[in-house]
Every structure is written in structure tokens, then in C-alpha cells.
Amino acid sequence: MTVSETIGQEATILGAAVLAGAGLFFLYDILRIFRRIIPHGAIWIGVEDFIYWLICTGVVFVMIYRENDGMVRGFALGGVVLGMLVYLLVLSRFVVRINVRIIKAVLGFIRKTGTFFLRPYWRIWKKTAGFIRKQLKKFMKAVKIGLSKR
Image 1 (cartoon, rainbow, N blue to C red):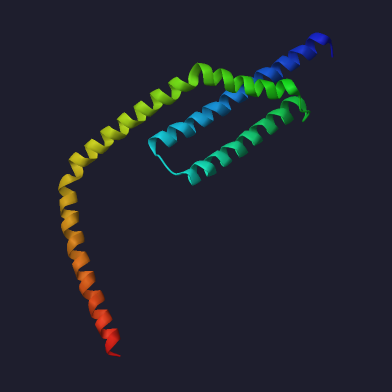
Image 2: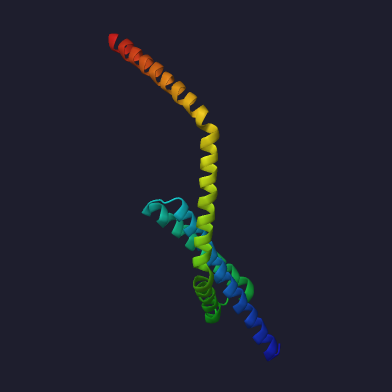
């Protein structure tokens, strides 16, 4: 293997590492979009982050194993970090902001449309549920009375 082939191979590894880093940060942006659409507590955020970092570990391991026969090279890990930073600085803000707006607009449209079409059925459901609730209360009262007589 000549010097230029070695440099070309290492440039390929660096390129794969940069792309992997950008892809991993895009995956985190998907997680951020999900969190903005459906807010949730600290425990679930911790679980999501733990799963994310497990996925990151697996992706970096597989990339290093395939591209470099398992030898950990500093420039490969640096390439992952560089890809993440470039994606963060160039695209991340726009990807999250635009997708959150689009998803919220679509969900708002679906909610309004669903409300318009389901409103008559909702009234019927409320009356039916109220009737069933009253009947269940009467039944439970009868069961309690029956059990207390024994």
C-alpha cells in the first residue's frame, strides 16, 4: 500500500466519521423535536438520553470496527465530534424550529378537523357515559349492601 492509498483510506475514515457525527446529532434533533411536541418529565428525558447514548456508542463502535478494523484512532473520534459540531452550528437550529412548526400546524389542523367532525358524537358519548356511570354506581351500592347483610 502506497502513501497516497493510506492517506485516501484515512480520508475515507474521516469522512465516514464526520457523516456519522452529523447523523447522530440529527438523531438527537429528532429527540428534541419529540420533546418540544410532547413535553415530559425529567425521568423520561433521562431514559431517552440514556437510550440515545447507547445508540451513539453502538454507531461509533460499528463505524470504527468496519472502517478501521477496530483500532481506535483519534482522528476518527475527532471526525465524529467535528460532524456533530458542524451540524449543530449549520443545520440544527433550522431543522428543529421548522419541523416543530410543521408538526404543530399539522396536529392543530387534525385537532380542529377532528373536533368539527366528532363534536356531535362527543355529546352522545358524554350522555351515554353519564348513564353508564350512574348505573354502575347503583350496582356497586347494591353489591355493598348485599355484602354487608351477610
